[in-house]
Length: 206
Image 1: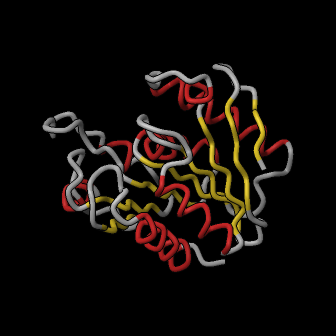
Image 2: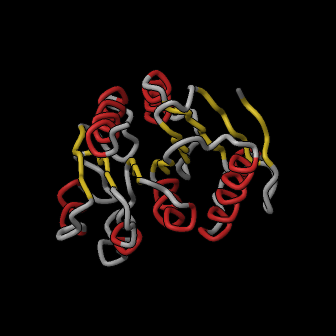
């Protein structure tokens, strides 16, 4: 199922699948591609098969065919408008897990509290710009107050798994899963999905 949802920044696209018996998983994409990215597609398929209602959200800038993502506040506003619409139409059944890759993972972290998320699943979290570890985005991760998992490529130039783990040291509700590959997570999307599903099953059991 695919439909368009109005937001303050133009229409967003929502691709939905699954029953919702296990809860709802909402996935956001990164700045370099849309919800069709291999890792998001693999995770969406696995989660829908496991009983989750999965919504993959394409941000308005992506729907409009633009090449550059807008500033974070605009991403958060559009994301919030989509979730508001899904909530009003009874399409957020059960526990809500916010998720995304890269920029979408940042959106999920920043909005988790306001949206009442039961957990946050971050794929390829961009801990810092490549070669700029001093520009850390760790506060977005440590600000999450619900169970959090980061699935990170072993050679990710935006922060390796050990860097993410160090940023989350002392945060008892956070986990880091290392998988082969770089920031794109294209090397083995099935393994990315398996890691995410393992966390959903073990940390957020039905």
